Amino acid sequence: MPFNLLDLDQVQALTVLRGESLRTGDAHGWALARYEGAGLAWMKGAGERWNNHLPKPLRIRMRPQGV
Image (cartoon, rainbow, N blue to C red; front, side, top):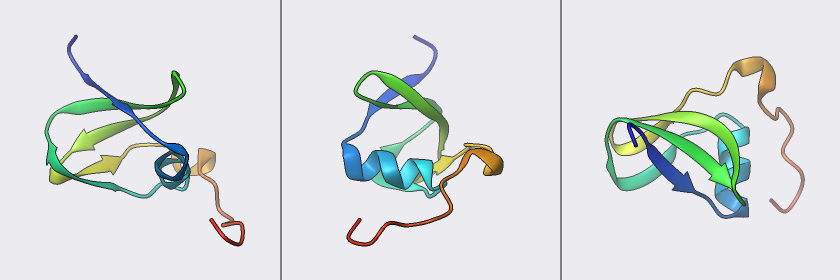
């Protein structure tokens, strides 16, 4: 496979859908962020984090209380 798959939990999935980066120990190349098998966004590795490439119009702009 020419790209990585990132299987996320619910908190990480919401982080991605807000357009934020994910912190990891080893991030290189491109990856498809998934939640329960559904593709959410493309991420590009930058050493210790995955930078989010979800288009701005598709991002969640409000943060519900407690999440």
